[in-house]
Amino acid sequence: MAKRDYYEILGVAKSASADEIKKAYRRVAKQYHPDRNPGNPEAEAKFKEACEAYEVLSEPDKRARYDQYGHEGVNFGRGGFSYENFTHAGDFEDIFSSIFGNIFGGGGAQTRGRGPQVERGRDLKVNLSITLEEAFAGKEAEIALTRLESCEACHGSGASPGSKPKTCPRCKGSGAIRFQQGFFSMNTVCDVCQGQGEIIENPCTTCSGRGRVNKRTRVKVRIPAGVDTDNRVRVSGEGEVGPHNGPRGDLYIDITVKEHDVFERQGEDLVTQVNLSYAQAALGDEIEVPTLDSTEKITVAPGTQSHTLFRLTGKGMPRVNDNRRRGDLYVRTIVETPTHLTEREKELLRELAAINSEKISEGKGFFSRIKQEIKNAFAD
Image 1 (tube, rainbow, N blue to C red):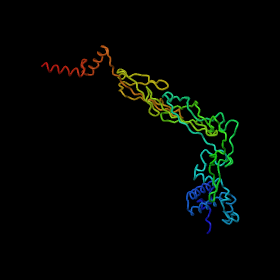
Image 2 (spheres, rainbow, N blue to C red):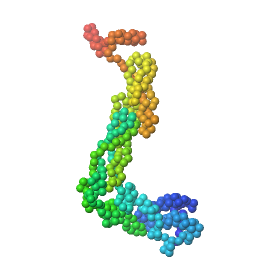
Image 3 (cartoon, rainbow, N blue to C red):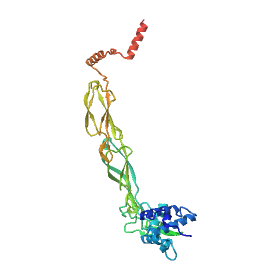
Image 4 (spheres, one colour):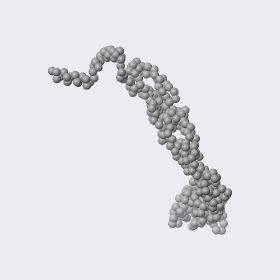
């Protein structure tokens, strides 16, 4: 049966760049990979077809001969194309890794088949409660935590002082075992050393051969200005150390901002309230109100009612990672009703009431008036 055009197999134009050809090959190879299509001879044939097409089109010289002479211009040797002659092993292994992920030790933060695996340490999470003032200005905090550190006795090797780990006899230190499956070979994690490439015959007594011990420590961190409750701050490289001195994980700090006595926070805005006397509300005044970092003056217009809102632009909370921009401060006025009046104050209020044609009961409340009316009724 005549061979299909290589460009058609990969679904690219003859003018396609090397990157386009590579992307197309990966897409087709993943789609028809035999392990994704078990027992499907048609898929396996298309997979082999894609490998052969890529072998030619990815090599400039072979591609040039193919473009000029077609399939006859490409010489694979007497046996034709074979996986043993497939020179792009790296691309083939990338396809395999993308299908199987970490099942065979590939991907992630580990090396595969190239000596002891390097494993990243675990991430840690702590909670931190701060005041609104600290959230406003930012804070240098010291976090106390317990985490795994490299054992000082064995320097993280896991072997007792004076001894060393021994190269794994099964994988010869590679951390992986290579075996053949069908028409291709692949790596799997060594079952003796678990991918480390080494075995420990004389474990360290301090860490019991683990190479790491729990240690109480304190970490200084910077909490940025503007954080709010449920925000999370990431501190890179302050988590646990990885096995065999592997890279550290990260430290995550979950923030809680305490409630404030004066200010109520609403995102980047703040709300507070100030009390006005009857005279201030009626006649108007200039008053001073607090902010988180200073004080501001606002002008109260004559006749201001209770629960009037004044807006002070840019006097709220800063934005995280952009402290030049801030929310607003809203000031709510509360007109106070006096509870203890002097006789002179009462007299003045009566005069005001008279001016406004208001009738004021002379010191008698509602229940006092009802009581007097009942008494009068029985007297009759």
